[in-house]
Figure (cartoon, rainbow, N blue to C red):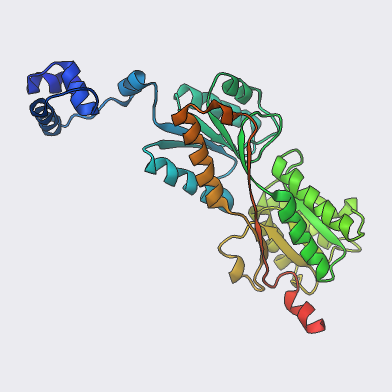
Length: 342
């Protein structure tokens, strides 16, 4: 049988109230009584009841995390940042993957709420979620990670996707590429929309019209991206460059180019949004937009804990914390070829 607080109190010869204060390190307890209670608890293998403690403190010291896919480099690093901060401050985490599915996201929101988490960090699968709005109205501290739809009134920790995409596409144009295809994620997801906006702005600023034939959607999936990349390759006038808006889709695009013996960058240049660890190992090394994903996670968690611990409900309004990405230039856009021609 699991040992209870009453068992500890009885063997230590004190009341349950004294035993509770001694084990919880609050209130007055004599040094003698405290030492006796702690010694008995250790001897009989007593473990505090987290549920009972949360009922007393109104805190579970647990944070909920909902993201789209933990296997992507961005979310792997961001979640690591969240967990490192949470553990340092005595919090545990519950992690859920929505797989870009609104229904699954809503189901996880309900589970997390039932678990009485102290706060939530979420990367949303759509522009809005009525159940999430309900939780925010009910007072649940929430921080939006990576994706910050305006419909949700909460603090947002996001990347400047427009500037990151603009810099990547502008880099291709400076290297002489004019027919630039884009493989985007899912229309309506804020990161996809913002990166597409950066793509369009770069073309416009260089007097290049957006060609609808050069806009395709990989839906954040590798196999779907392989298919649309093949469609690009099979065009009568294929693109001379590709801008791919996340790591998983960049992998799919590279596979398709390799399978069809397309030379990079001689025939098609490529730049990805996300800088995975394997990027410099590619032949040629991949030019990519690096996101400060670990910092996104740490800042999101620090912000959430400030809201939780200080009762700082004002920060659940519409504050945006925006981090800048960085273009890492290597060789997949034709950097070496351009230098030779120059």
